[in-house]
Length: 291
Image (tube, rainbow, N blue to C red; front, side, top):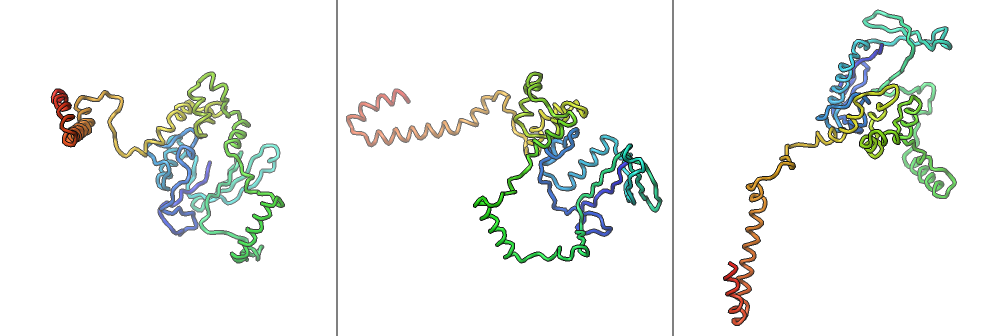
């Protein structure tokens, strides 16, 4: 069971203490990188979508996998406690409340997914100096001093200690046996291996093998660029694979050829007028025979 309440998507203010998503919000991660690994976005969805489209995607996912029967809406979690035999079973006692009625249940696992808070909750009574932020001039002076110490080698630049997310994902996938084997893929399916190794690291590749293997993973990987380009196509263009007709060639090349011919005639006339008489007498019969 999952206790969860859908966010109000089109309101800027909170009336019941729940999180609100502002209307102009747009995802900053493209759809192929942010989808569930076994449920790609529809191809006509924009690559970076507003909150309404993303909400539609979540509903489609829940309906596709018949998850609504496992979700209890408008339910409050009152308490979560380890059971007396937690060291052996890892189970939890969870008390929930729905419409004023409490219910106790035992769960094998608990995830606390808080989401985004609308209002900050700071323990100011426990930490009185938490909100005493120094003036901006002092902060800038400290930042400049820190940069100088880094340049002199006195202090280490911690901003360089960044996590390579692909390596991190590979490590996690290797723990459960879902990391794709590139050498094996090159032997069995070179085209797929090429897309996995040289293409973007999309979630589908962790569904190619292992306990969560999905039969649609290969097709999802091979068509990911099609879904990326689909929303960018604002008009239908003629199929370039079909042989063009003679009328098509006349429309494309007729005007340039006619213009080039007129320029040649004009240049020829100008040359004849400016040429000496004896040279013009020798060239004219030749031009007459050409035209």
